[in-house]
Image 1 (tube, rainbow, N blue to C red):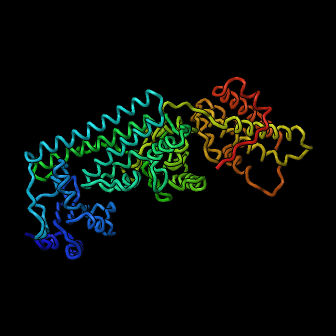
Image 2 (image 1 turned 60 degrees about the horizontal axis):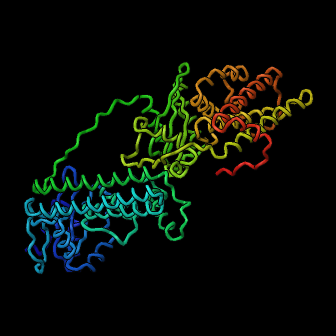
Image 3 (image 1 turned 90 degrees about the horizontal axis):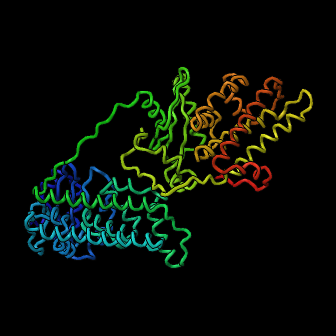
Length: 549
């Protein structure tokens, strides 16, 4: 009997941890402590087996016991002796793998014998254990399909929620030795991420404590209670099914891995191959490095690039927190300054949560961009993918209001242009600049189903050309108006300047031509998505514009 912690464990591994484990054996009646050293594909594990369940809960609540995702520390598990015996009889391969006689570093004199488990002794139990999982999952998925065919959104949501809970429960027993049924599903997924970091790839966070897809499924409970299905989103069913299948794959892979480990006597070899990575463009790598120094991001997608003379322009979608207009403008200016004008960037920045919760507005745009082939940077490999809605049709909500605002601003310019007194051009540049920015932004919305933030004029124009490449031919008018400083002039026109305005008539004529051309193009773009009667209805509309965040 090993009535003390083995001295070798303290000397070779972690003396402080060994002392804490020794102290536990003095405070509580501990039956066993098992230690499995780190392997190529698995971290070190310590299983603490108290004699009684009430002691297991007390030990598990201690701060140093909680797993925090530190890869350099052993994973700690607390399972009562009765629960360990139950899971072993049920065929749980986690117990068979890690509760072996050869892994004991402490054994109480009151504890019974712990046999070494080989594959023949657990084979039949393991088979029944796996079959129970697959059988129950199949029943739940069949029920979900049936509810979906019958048009019962509540039934479909609740059944998929049960399917998620079923698979999460098995993942917990396969990775932690027992389930955590007293916690909510959000907490259980978060806790599993310490054992399976890649599980977070399947769930976009709604906030720091909740996952978006789980919250959507839980709405089925409200619908069942109040009989109102209006808040249930049936267009997420494809994403729900895809996420459930990913969870199923985690269970299936874990079954296979533990089976191999039992067969090999506890030594698990990696069965993974290193992916072949293509060499990354040096300029883009330099750009991303500069970006990370200025503001950390989670992911970077390159969705377009263009070449003008000696300047290469990269169109980048940045995923992260705090990516407001001010920081994007600073990055844009810094890139241009530090590369001597050889590189330019058009930056779009949003958090993943913002994109997920605004799919109604922008899914068509982001779904085209956020492809693995376009991803050029990840801060870690387990960022989740968006839960896309299917079917999805772009709705262009509030396009009418943005269109109305844009044309009314342009009309104000022409009213002042027609009625201005001689030698007085005050206000024309301001109205022109605001009209151009409004027309750019609304055109992007109509063409791309994406309403950008208040980006600089250059970025908005580049997005217009990205949406409609033939627009590039219009740039000769910009040069005719202001030379190479057109976009800078437009941006400055939207700021207060206490000075006398003096705009030559020749320049005003070009400004007229630019606005008329943009108005014509915007009307065509809006008609293509809203129908021929679009403009006539809006010209007479006095409905106030929507409030923006």
